Image 1: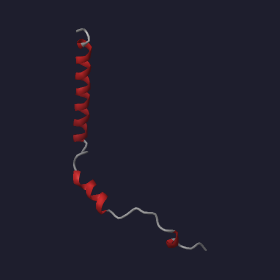
Image 2: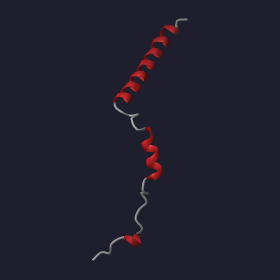
Image 3: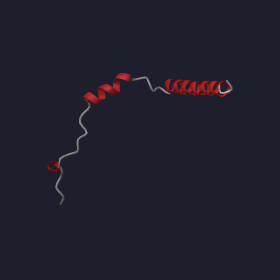
Image 4: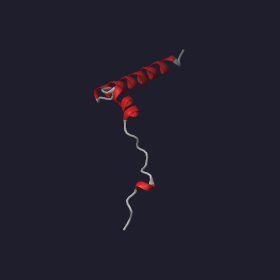
Length: 59
């Protein structure tokens, strides 16, 4: 029974910390563009390295 006096405040503290982190992420705009990142992955130009045959020749 004595354990609950420690566990309940710890659980409330962790919950409030998680709520504060979530509210901070909302305020800082982390969830503003949910579809943009998914579309960029599918439709962005490839970032493949340039093949050596396309390199300019040294002089």
